[in-house]
Amino acid sequence: MEAADIAESSVETAADAGAELRTGLRANAAAGENEIKSLFTTYNEKIIDILEQEFSASAETIVSINSQINGAGGAKATLETSIEASGDTGAIVQAYSAFYAAVETLVENLLSADSDAEAEVVADIMILVNMGN
Image (cartoon, rainbow, N blue to C red):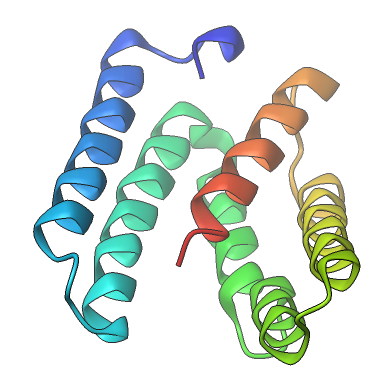
């Protein structure tokens, strides 16, 4: 985020969100799947809020990209289905590669970024916050 000239306060908020996620995961190590997903959902929401603020001209687009990633039949559902269906390491790597490409394509198609670097940062952040849960 720092490389994209995102405000220091937003970088700190993102770092705090990551720390809260780690603390929550450690504190709930024996938690069920729904509790773990809830922690990641909260983290995702905080990071999306930051992206909306930092790329305010594209706030609705950021929400749309995140919704499409997480929607039924979206890139995340495809990733999870592929991983659950295979114990083959090659297939899992392919699933993550397809997820990355799908998110990059969504960002390229939907975000009117000021530069290629900005679009790349948004794509990278969207990938990271959506593959964890």
